[in-house]
Length: 57
Image (cartoon, rainbow, N blue to C red):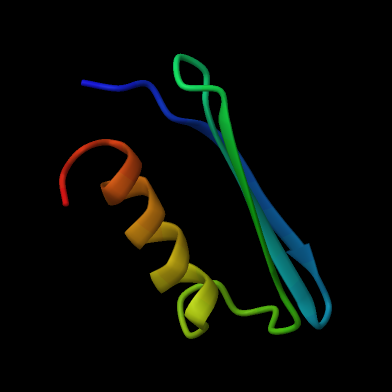
């Protein structure tokens, strides 16, 4: 199991997420001009990279 650290947040009209894998030194930043996390492509992109980098894909 790989450790994934991150933080997400947003404000009116924007949202973003930072994903960091400390052992591999990868950092992914996802920015969106949509403030809804569940209805945006940002959630799908974030879930894809988390699965990919954790070795689930």
